[in-house]
Image (cartoon, rainbow, N blue to C red; front, side, top):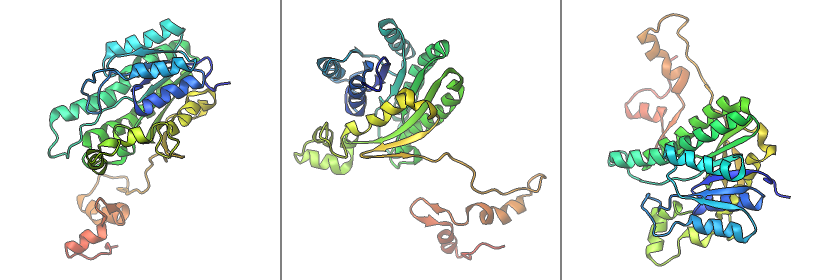
Length: 320
């Protein structure tokens, strides 16, 4: 018996990589799947053939049920059509898994407006747009809904990916907001930071050099290979979160990398400085800010507050 028997699902980015692995795994676990992919490469350029058709064929050949959808995840009308297609075809939508994404990598001082806008649009709006119409359906049903959106470890910061890092951090905030808003309707919302050998990982400098030297892309080598970089290592977590057993997990960020799952801690204030219940005195702030809040923090590049003081010729121990 599959853990998703009787459920229906939308998977965006289902043509390749973790989206493809997720759609196939959902179907193996009994779900009916709308496999959604625009048919573009990692940078968003149109491919000659949409790979989502192969995903659907794999599911059907194994006895599963799936339909392809070719729209743009950041389009409000396409997103509404996708949700309507699932409801018209199978009567309800239970699971929305937002995986589709592109990369336009550049250092912040070299990034152009189009590179910023395109990545934020596909990742962030491409999560919002389908969720809006799924949420309308779930609010009406008041019975069951599972939103799973792909963030990335880059949400903690990633040099050369300011657009991608910002979008992935935005997805975390979006998930937390949606989890709070939809809890009363029996809906959960969670973010995943995944890791596997996919088309996006093929782009690293070292990997690109090897590919130019004749090596096969890691996304091909590890596809279905059973290694720790196989994209099929990620969907088991998604199946759990999408299932009835996942009802008590919501508003969380969860890591799925290789043969490891992990739960991120929730951000919280770890230190405080108080004004004494009166308007801030500027001299007081400068006298106490570092001592109370930041004296032992490590900065990017392994620079610490003490090392910066030493560079300036200042004492390395803050004044009391």
